[in-house]
Amino acid sequence: MMKTLPEDFIFGGATAAYQCEGATRAGGKGPVAWDEFLEKQGRFTADPASDFYHQYPVDLELSRQFGVNGIRLSIAWSRIFPKGTGEVNQEGVQYYHDVLALAKEKGIQVFVTLHHFDTPKELFDKGDFLNRETIDAFVEYARFCFEEFGEVEYWSTFNEIYPIATNQYLNGTFPPGISYDLQKVIDCLHNMLYAHARVVNVFKDGGYRGQIGVVHSLETKYPATTSDEDVHAAFLDDALSIRMLLDGTFKGRYSAETMRALHEIAAENGLTIDFPEADFEEMEKAKDRNDYLGINHYQSHFVKAYHGESRIHHNGTGDKGTSSYAVKGIGERIYKEGLPRTDWDWLIYPKGLYDLLMRIKEDYPNYHAIYITENGMGYKDTFEDGKIFDEPRIDYVKQYMEALADAIADGVNVKGYFLWSLMDVFSWSNGYNKRYGLFYVDYDSQKRYPKLSAYWFKGLARTKEIKEKYEEEESYRQDKKVEE
Ligand code: BGP
Image 1 (cartoon, rainbow, N blue to C red):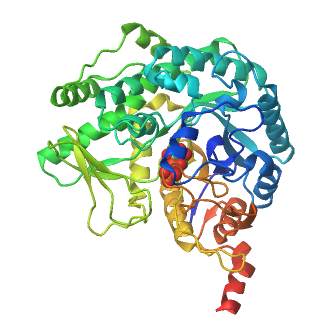
Image 2 (cartoon, rainbow, N blue to C red; image 1 turned 135 degrees about the horizontal axis):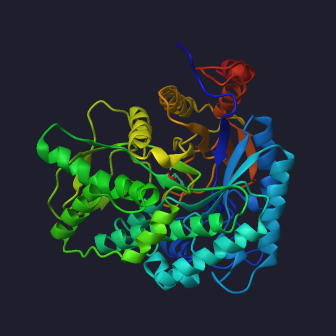
Image 3 (tube, rainbow, N blue to C red; image 1 turned 60 degrees about the horizontal axis):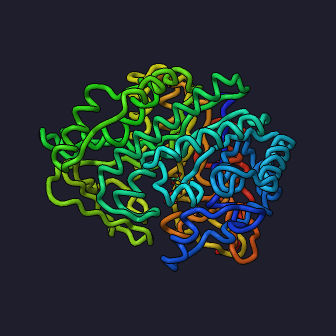
């Protein structure tokens, strides 16, 4: 039977300031840790990226033309407060007003993230969210945005608290590039969950119009085998990467099971678990005030027990089969025979999304609404005479859309889907060969070229029926035949 999506569904495209804007030193923007981190690595930089700073009218017009009725973007904190606190940069403020106004004119709903991996450098260098002063600064920045950008209808506090903590302090792929420091991971997770709660409470107490939520990256965990050890490893990995985040957000404190897992991980790694009790008062006050949950979901993991020293290799090049991930006292993520994965070793397993959504409905009934704020496929697109036939991406998105439609049919309130990414953007730890967009970006000329997937997406947004092909694609596909 053909699967369908609701009439009022958002068919969106996602972006993030640092990955698309470019202009990292222009318009009065203050520095972020990434500028120096990438410069030192010497592989690639975020300039000009997709030059959204200047090209946004082009991207918004393409969105309109292709039925993309929602976009996700983030405000670069250091464009508003170049040092994180203190003086406001009016040029940055005006820039976002202009983008929001044009989106509105084109009938595109905008979801605004306050923090997408880009803490201003001054605050970052003092410990980022490990330093409680950053929390205060973040709350003030958020308050400023709520006052200033009254035109915004959907706010998200953070993008992906768990990947921030682990990429910064466990696998070292994000600045400050620290590896295997689980103490910092856990402290960072808690501090950011607390910061989220504070901002939600400021928003609700202040009576600002619009909705507020958070975007969590949630990658479903399964045991590698049915052995007790592996089942337990999956429980531990899940507790740190999913349950702690959802408990913190929707229960206002960590459940007994989460704490049991944290204490076990702590014992094996010599960590101290010590969360200030007062934080939970704030978190409890916020737990029912989230208007929605944003979920970024790309893949799932199969986990096996692991007690050796931690060892992680990040595949940041697209050389399939090069990644490995094993964390002491948590588990080792393995490849399941027969399951497809991308060139960056991300497992393609749509059932993981279905299971995740059903579990949230069950365990966190106060989630109110869910938006899939990111999903998509990193792929080495081939550009031939202005055309990009990205069938594997279409196939990936179609499968995940079907899982989503199944979950909706089974009672989960999912109200929208944002493809990562709207147009090709810069990828933090992979650079520019890992493309995700509906629109191909030629980074030299900054010209955009709709991919086959853009026509597919347009057909989907028009019909709300999940199909392999739509009439929108016909002439695009026709050209391929002639060329062949
Ligand atoms: C999410 C981030 C995005 C984006 C995406 C794809 O974690 O929110 O910013 O980068 O993942 O990841 P990557 O670029 O590493 O392939």
